[in-house]
View 1 (cartoon, rainbow, N blue to C red):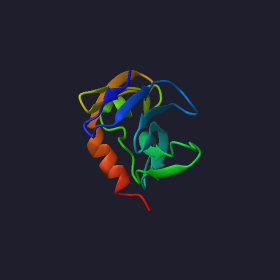
View 2 (cartoon, one colour; view 1 turned 60 degrees about the vertical axis):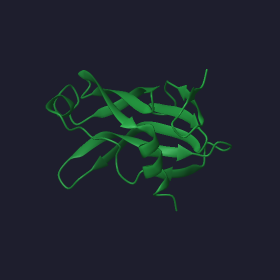
View 3 (cartoon, rainbow, N blue to C red; view 1 turned 120 degrees about the horizontal axis):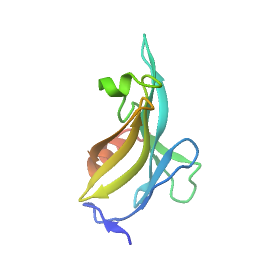
View 4 (cartoon, rainbow, N blue to C red; view 1 turned 180 degrees about the vertical axis):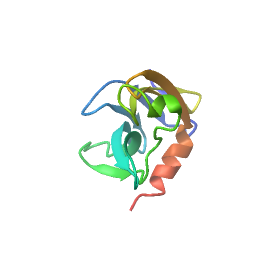
Length: 129
């Protein structure tokens, strides 16, 4: 059964894998996707969590993507492990407007972080072209 978000929209949560660890949430504004991405700075390459909003009618059309990672390896246990510098989202849960993102870290540990769903959507939509 769909939950109500703070914005009054029905929210349907999909948890699972679809093309490289992709989580989807059906929202009034589109489909929120939290997925595995990669990036680098001058000195290091790492895998990170990214977020994008997909079109409801054509999921191949990306409405907007955060121009920066949602989160990156930051803690020692995310940086050093079987595979260094990796955080990969594996599931999400929505409770009271807070989106909890469960993720693997350095192929050695499991973590959980959270973000306010409404604030994430506002941030995403602020980058819409």
